[in-house]
Image 1 (tube, one colour):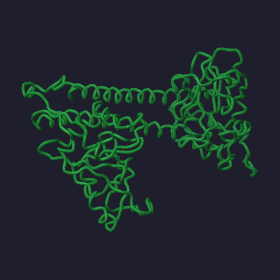
Image 2 (cartoon, helix red, strand yellow):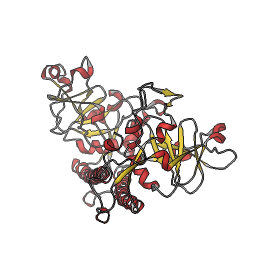
Image 3 (spheres, helix red, strand yellow):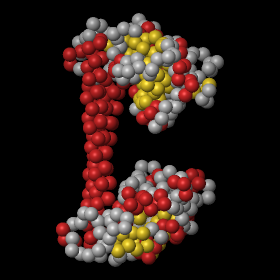
Image 4 (cartoon, one colour):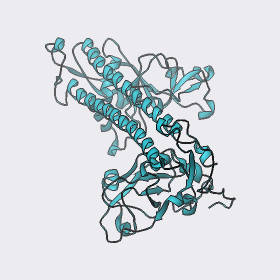
Length: 446
C-alpha cells in the first residue's frame, strides 16, 4: 500500500448534485441522485469452499467469470480448491490483477445458479446486503470501470503482492456508488439495466452473425479449393464444370518477387507522422489491411529500402510470430511504401496467378495447413523465402476461374466487414449510453 494520504470516502448521506445527462421520462420529476459507499450496501464474503462441490471459476477481463474447464480445458484448482472463496448467484468477484482495459482489476458478477468458487489468493468477493442496488445495475457500473477510477488513488505504481495488486478491502468498500434517490430508485436502476441489457442482446446477435458468416466462408473455401489428393474442387461454378481438371504448381514459378524488408536503424525513433507507409505485421489482417496505426518513414529512409517498395496488388504475408499466416492484398493506400522483416511481399505473374485468388488460398484451411507444416512442433516461429516459394498452389485451367472464386470469397469478406462495422457501431452506442445514463465517474469519485 502507498503511504500517501488517502482520499476521503463520500458519505452515504452526501448531497452532491449528481445528475446523469439522460433520464427516462417517468423519472425526470423524481428525486435526484446521490452516492452510497459500497460498504453500506454490500459486505465482504469470506466463506470458503471446504468440502462443498462447486464450479471452479476463472475470469476473462471484459467478459466475466468463466469455468476453468471452459477457459483452460481442465480444472486447475488442485489442492487449493478447498480454500477457494464461495460464490452464490449475484455475488461479485474482484480480481486484483491488472489488465490493459482494467489496470486496477476487474469486478465480475456471478449469474450462475450453481455454487461456484474463485481462488482466494487474487480475489475479493462481496455481495449486496438488501434489495438495492440491483446487482445488474451495479455490474454495469463496474463494466464502466467506476471502481478503477476510485481505486487508482490507492495503488502505488508497480505495487503488487504475490502477483496481484495490493488493494485493501476497506478501500474497495469505500467506493462511492451513484444511485437514484427516493422510492423509485430501484425501478429506475432496473430500467437502466433493461435498456443496456437490450443493447447487449443486440451485440450478441450481431456477433453471432459475424461468426456464422466466418464459419460459412471457411466451409465454402473447403468446397471451392480441391482437397488433398483431389484434382477438382467439390463445388465449381456452372460455366467451369466442364473446364477440365486442376493442376498444382509451386508458388515460386508464378511470382516475380518473394521478399521482405528490414526495420530502420533506431526502430520507432525513425517513424514519422507522415511520409511513406511502413507496413508491419500488425497492419496485415485476415484478408484485410489494418492501417489505424500504420507507421511512416521519410524519403531518405525509403530510398535505402527500394527493394522492399510495395506495389498495388502485392500479396502481403506475415512470416513470423503469433500472426504468421495472415495475408492481405496491397492497395493504393500503401502502394509506394515499404514492409519490415516480418512481412513478405509476394508479387505474382498476373497472367498465371490472380493476386486475390492467391490471397484467399493462403488464408484458407488448405493454405494454412501448408503454412503450419513448415513450423516445427507447431510453434509457428517463422517462414523463409524458400519455403514460401515451395508452397503448392492448386490452379484451375483458366485464370478467369481463379478470378471468379476470388470474387465470390471477397464479396463475403465485404459482407463480414460490414457486419463488423455494425457491431462496432452498436458497441460505441452502448458506451455512449452508459456515459449518459450514469452520472460522470469524475463527479462520483471526486
